[in-house]
Length: 86
Image (tube, rainbow, N blue to C red; front, side):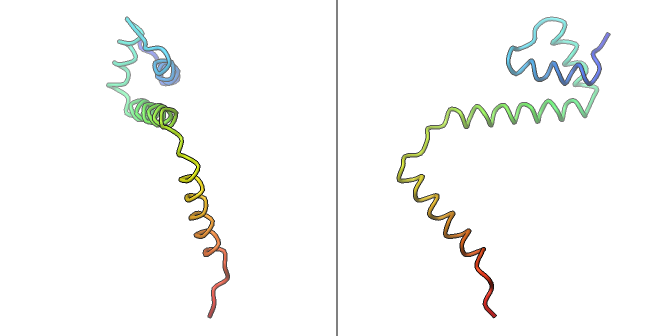
């Protein structure tokens, strides 16, 4: 019997941490072929996982870059907060 959407959602999440094997993997893939909603969910989970992995693996910017980014942000934010002059 094929898993339902709730079960597939759980399996998709599990598959990120520990890849499924055997019949569980096959049943999940077959369900994904038939269900557009679960395919979309699977894609979103993959994108989220890839994004988090990328962020975690990126080197942190040095202090000078961090200060420049904060300074630029503060300047832009202050300009937007100023009342408009007529």
